[in-house]
Length: 79
Image (cartoon, rainbow, N blue to C red; front, side):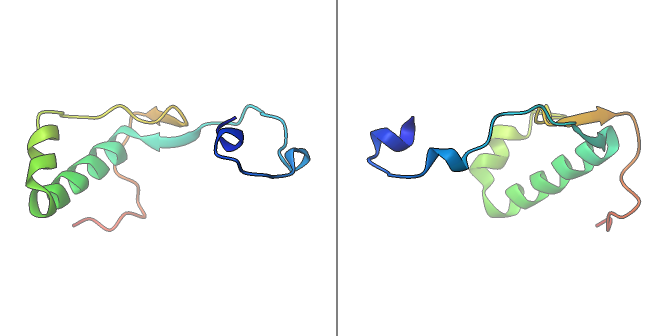
């Protein structure tokens, strides 16, 4: 383990077994909205990162998310 290689000492009995978990539902509209929001921030705060990512129309989501077709979430404050 990385902790061992760094010389950390901890109680391994406190670490539970790995288990499968249900994915988190999200919509394609929400993912698109979040990406556009991030790109607006990058354009203003980090132009070099913005230029690096601006060609990506829609990023892949993390495997934890289950992306389904749909609009932006109703609770989202739209900018």
